[in-house]
Image 1 (cartoon, helix red, strand yellow):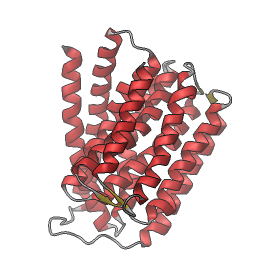
Image 2: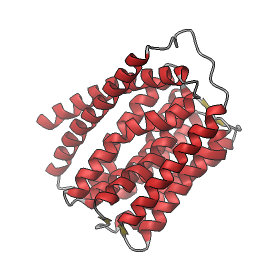
Image 3: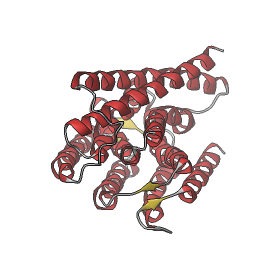
Image 4: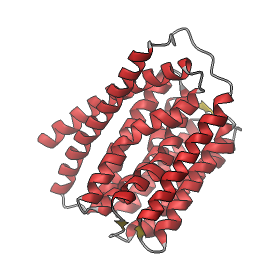
Length: 312
């Protein structure tokens, strides 16, 4: 009963946090004259990736490396296979040119870098973490320097900028609520899973990763409702980059992350690479630079297949 209460409370905090975070992101993009997709890929992505960071550091330090790795790999799969699928089933997204010139290539590069670091020796060490964190810093510098000059979305009537102190307050409250909500959700989910004797990797790749992906889902659905679709797609792509470069990078700086369950290298990581790559052809076919409900169905089927084959 306590675990179910944690899950309900966690979901409540996550939805409230997603709303506050989005309000601050839109206000900041208007005040600082920055395209919303850049705000989505930086501030919103970082705040919604905070649960993965906290959970992964705690898991690795406490001696549960598979939970840390499974959390990030599973979250990246869930962001595209589950969260993006749900968003597309709610409405189509027109994709900007920056998706295939910058955002998607960087996400694939980060995924392949992680694959190269961990596949051959089964461990993420400190110098690899440094490379990841430096890579993330360079990516952020590039985003803010070059994409800032892109055309800023037209402000809508209901987009009256919040005062700066309110925008910062909502940003802080949103991040805090997302973090607290994820903590409760993960605690409740893991508590339920442990009752059934499920392995650490399976918990990480399914329940924990879905739990820590709910901030992305909450923030993105609220973005869709408020017609801020640039933020919802940018948030997911940015979140996947943050999950690898920041979450795993910072965690491996603190303590090396060693793969304990070979299923992660033999199965999970290939699903992550596959679904990350799949987004590119879906963006171009059947309609160029557009994602619709059919693409959402494809992603959902892929995600359900991943869950099915992983827990078998």
